[in-house]
Length: 157
Image (cartoon, rainbow, N blue to C red; front, side, top):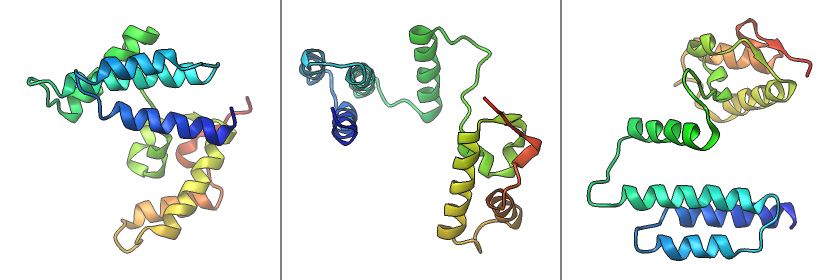
């Protein structure tokens, strides 16, 4: 399957997953399970099934979880599915764009370093920098200019 076709299928499954109810979920799961899968599509189908089931339960009369509870669901899933046990953390590299999150980082990959520089440039190009604090704007400029933030080391792996 071509990459564009694969990403389109993935996106459609995820969009439909977010609309599932207890009534619609069985048909959605049947469709996902009967798709002629390859190495990639089976992963997306399993993820879409999990997201669809979560939304179906969320929509039950006792549903209505908070964002905090949603985070708890993610960690419960990480433990039950992947065996990730606390202490653990999920690191979002977008946090490296804000100086208040320096404590989260000590090394990054070359790919992440390139991504951070690109994102810093995008923010400088698209954000109303008059509404952004000077320390954040200076931080973005520093990253854009090639200074690795927070004393991080760019890994050579």
